[in-house]
Length: 235
Image 1: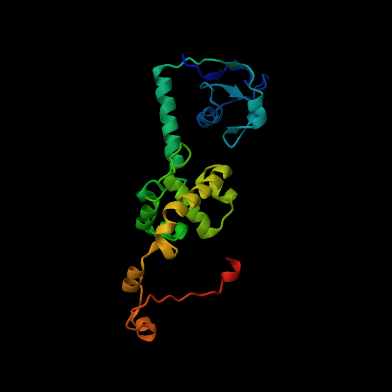
Image 2: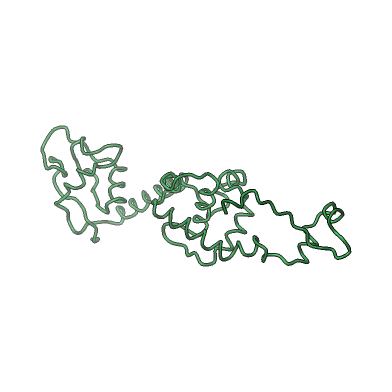
């Protein structure tokens, strides 16, 4: 016996509205599984209800609110437990194929990474190493947060649309974007952008073209910068 809520009732009556009728249907296996996953309620095999309570293999919200006569425990034998675990496993595998997964390199190829984030897998992996203060949670990993952030920057999609694509809540999208932005500003940006990220010697040695040195250089071998002020007014 397990401490899981379950429905009672007879096969001759609907366990939702308690009505008798010859048109009762047997609740399908997929509907019973969806009810357990969403509401933590066990519906035993063979349970019957009115067909109007179910739509697209899910009970309506009104039907779920009517489930008042719930048992506080459920009798489970070994076969029932194995069957439930197998169904949950298949559901997870099915859903795993439908969501964007940045935790496994094999889930997306280079072209898909570039389409979503503008960078390839190797660059993504390198950028992910800079997320030193983001902890993995049950909802999302640090790599998923980075994928959300880069996809947001790449596409400009709304948080609502990103929530649908990544199968997380809209608030989770907002927190992921804010957390990654703050983290990269502390760890990545100072090392790759701005005047302080490179020394004068490295600038002259690695980033000065021969033509610029010929036109503007002299015996002092100066550091040559070309600064464009086109967008200064919006900075």
